[in-house]
Image 1 (tube, rainbow, N blue to C red):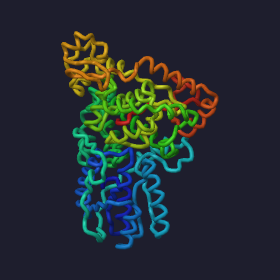
Image 2 (cartoon, one colour; image 1 turned 45 degrees about the horizontal axis):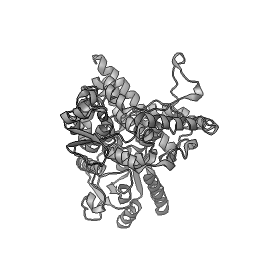
Image 3 (tube, rainbow, N blue to C red; image 1 turned 90 degrees about the vertical axis):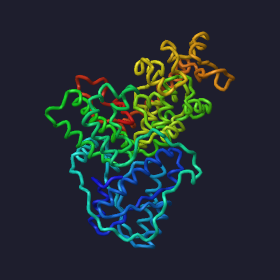
Length: 506
């Protein structure tokens, strides 16, 4: 979604007349991890890209259809010899589509070249070389925007497809970020110049994270910015001698997160199956047979009864974004007290996130659910998280108006309110779906302490089996970071390297 630092565009322009085509694939948008909010964001990106390409002398053509069918139509109407695109670490559907495109190109004598666009290395032989390759790519010069000669377009221009016409459920996020490179550049500049001073210490709380986080994640996911562009812009800002200490600390931490962004994407690139199955196969069968539809419904409809959880889901429904700690908390709540398998929860959350990046998303779903076999068990208590990161209840009250009159003492555990307090604040706490008078707040979906203890016991029992212990080393070899801790600070032996936690959103 950009003309700057776009290797596919630059190489195509050097060969001769160019057609710039974006194919809207119905099969992709019918996948369980997509949504209208992403579709609407994409449309704004394409409108912006149309303007960018017009300045380069060419027109953007948007076509609806499956990729190989559209390529066949184009080849019949206007023979072409080269196809240029970027490498993509996408979901399973896009992986299968790419293999179909490769077969199509081989059959039709078209040379298809996929260009590098991130720090993800295709066909990486060993994790030992990955960090050096990432650094090399990020330090390479950015590509300038080319001037192009347009190839003749053979058909009348198509209209943008309407989301309802596909029979898909509406799922707009009215308060989401705006798509497009112009918005991306403004967001990058505001972060580097002003907001980065809040980054350290500000990204964990949902109160401060909205401005403290870079908010670049959707623009990186959709390609409005290149990873190299962001890394180099950050390093350039860090080179300023008069930078204030908090901004410098924030940008140093942010640079580390950019590295980890690609590190997690590399996991899915190296093992596409982790979208579909447990990274450590020793955890197969742990949760799969215990799916509880009511628990899942209560989670996704923001009616778990735990205020911070329900406030986070409500914010996500409205904005398509949530900071990393709250995302991790949602997955933890789903995986432990609700005992839900990560795959179904992952599809729901993927559609909620405008910045959905499959490589990061599925690795994180498994890490937070405890099925990687190499990471520390992370169980987030939603009551403690509320007390730590929303102590005055500002965030909870913002997104849950029904609780605005509840006193601070009871805000994070409203089910403990005496009847007299419930009457005073106009909130009745009772079973979900019961008959109530006045504003209703549901009782917790499960007993949090008891359900969490049971879940941890089940997970740790599986973790301690010989089968799981024996399979751990192979996962470390394929997926774990090689950025070793200095010897004086090392807490593990070299064979027990564990990934740091990365936020989904920066």
